[in-house]
Image (cartoon, rainbow over all chains, first blue to last red; front, side):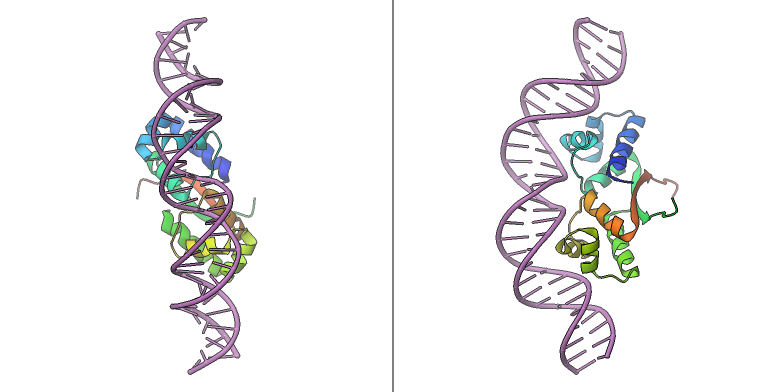
Length: 70
Length: 70
DNA sequence: CATAAAAGTGCTATAAAATGCTCTTTTTGA
DNA sequence: TCAAAAAGAGCATTTTATAGCACTTTTATG
């Protein structure tokens, strides 16, 4: 998954839970401004920011061998 | 995967390819100093840094629903 | 529609990531 | 064992992520 897809995954997962950016900010401990920036496609989050968001949304970051057959 | 595991994955994959940090730096476009810091367990890389390294090592970042059954 | 809630943006301060250079320590192989 | 290669660390600089505040725009709903 590239950058955009990861951002999209966050947005979709948040919306699936029907929580607002503000809710997610509180749950994850990531600043609201940061979330807004990310979801609107700006910035370049650090691993810990992504992981905090993941923890709050039940998403996990995996770094795996890329499937080259497709 | 948590932070440390991701770093370990990078290190193991690089060593599996038997390339040096310097080689990886050149291949990935990530500064040598940055790689050294990361592999020695310091810092908090941005997504793009992780992805550049992944591109050079055939590793892909995936943000997936966490398996809660374990 | 009108209005409230949610999302997005400009400005700005602070902290930290990325980077290069140089030097030290560790690892490796002849 | 010892010299070269690789890895790690100190120092300094530039860039940028994080964050809060206030404001605007968009979306949802009664």
